Length: 460
Image 1 (tube, rainbow, N blue to C red):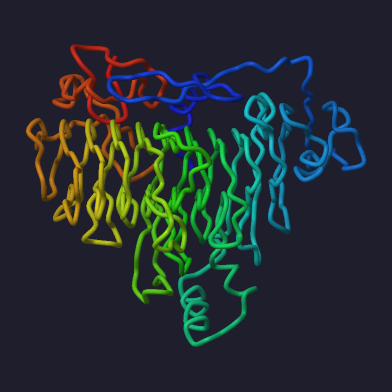
Image 2: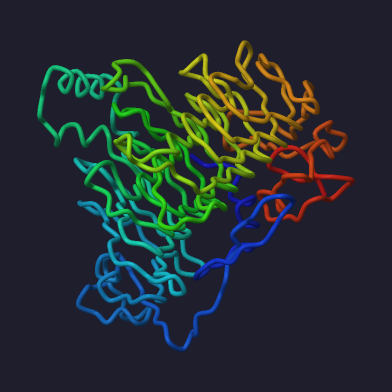
């Protein structure tokens, strides 16, 4: 599916750089992680991958002697090195496993070669297309495509019913539950990775979830386009998911960051096997983040904070942005439109059973009869300086407004939708600078007027 967000993401790509290590600064009343570049370029190497002309017997040190697989590049790479992926349609038959770690000042980077647009296509019985259990890793500018277009609802439902009846055909189940990029994993699968950056990638058409982090720390997902995922899985997946992070240190500042992403048409159509009902299919979910996976009474709660900013989420089956059974989250300057297409009672942006959450400076435009937000079982959850339209507003902050935000092109079609604001929009200068994203989804500094605009786009 083509979409007009490519030009939007160019600004993000130019604005961001590969980084090694992090510093912190204060923005408003919150602490933000910012890149730190300190690697001596003379001490690092570049390796090159080409599906067409490469061989894993080559040195990989030049475009004229490329390797063939990412695995070969990983085997040769040391902390600080970059593995460049050249043009081609790569078709791995097994999971790409990134297990080798960089260091705090020398990440290992896997990225598209300059001017190239590599694409990885996955099909068959694979649970995860890409599995990351190393730390200090960057994946940037690569397209990952699943096999949804060749699968059917009836076959996926038959797979679910086979499992429900006590079946053990894992090869069959993997076909309909393949995830895109999975960081860490449930229970003993996870090696507790940390400091992972997934940037400017396209992740789409996976029958399972798009991009997930489970039992990991310091996950940064930025500038990605995530669509058409989770259609056929029986485990309640979403476009982007962060579940049960662990503390790799004791810092209470931002450790997980989800920003500048575009998430649409992610939805579940097959029941969640453990509940035997439909669930999730969200654009973005921050899920059960204040206790470890399979927590016991003696486990300590997660102390890190999560930032969700400048994302555009539309036409998902579940929420646009969903925080559930979680704590220490800031959901700011996001745009959500026409979500909850399958999970009809879900709100477009909301917190449920949460503590210490700020939901501010967002635009929330629901389907007819939909729910803008929710205030179920929450403690210390703030809604304020948001724009709501069409749907029901369960809780209204003192500076929230119910009014048409006036998008440039309102559509659920990714090829024409444009969620920036028309001149004269009531969302312009309607936010607060007490907590805000200092740059919009395109990297444009805020504010451009008297104060910040609501939503992901700042009007120039």
